[in-house]
Image (cartoon, rainbow, N blue to C red; front, side):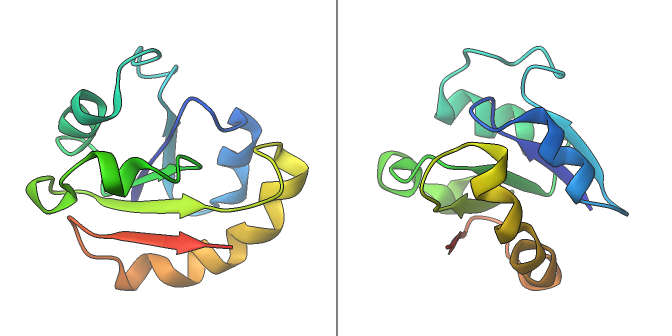
Length: 105
């Protein structure tokens, strides 16, 4: 699966998604691009967008985007706090649907 990590996530988390093609928003030269535009760009090249932005599903009408969204909820957005959530994300990947958001905490 092709996964895009939001710019607010530590790029080192990409290594945790073994077997998947993972890029970060800054690697794609998309740093600073707001969520609606970012999702529009991402849906053309990625299957899943991973973020810690809890408001994303309220700010954007996700069904209009052909990309699944995973929202990570942890104590902080530091890699140490997010890393324990990755096995749950990996288990969910096959069931994710474009235009839907799933929260993992």
